[in-house]
Length: 169
Image 1 (cartoon, rainbow, N blue to C red):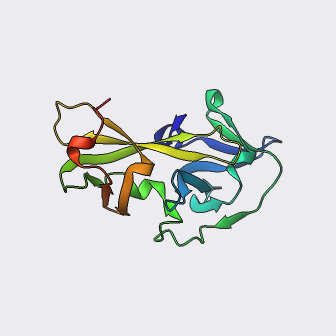
Image 2 (tube, rainbow, N blue to C red):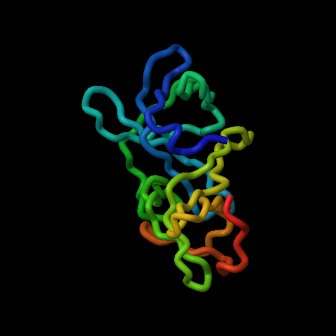
């Protein structure tokens, strides 16, 4: 598993070594139990404009040691055309800093990163999200995205009450 923050700035290349761009964010479908990654937001060329690489993530080789993703084959790059205001096409970075609440409206802290499994045969999945607790003495929380009941750009509400949550890890 990789953290989303670890992938920021990685090169995205074709198998020939030709650079496609640099990872800036991921687009996910939050309506699924585990959030599949449906696109990669990247900057490309000298203009540094944001574009979306629409490629099945199971066709990307992760070379973590070299901080890059390698695309097998060629796919067109298109302007970021997805409506990222809908839950099935949400830019993951828009949730960074979102306030996290339990079902009983207890404030737990702020989301700050996401754990992504790049191994599933069907493509990448976001499994967990990390929460920095409001109490500085508490350890961070690692929660499953499947435990989210409600989501908006600045607020995440869990299915569980505060007492039902696992211990901080």
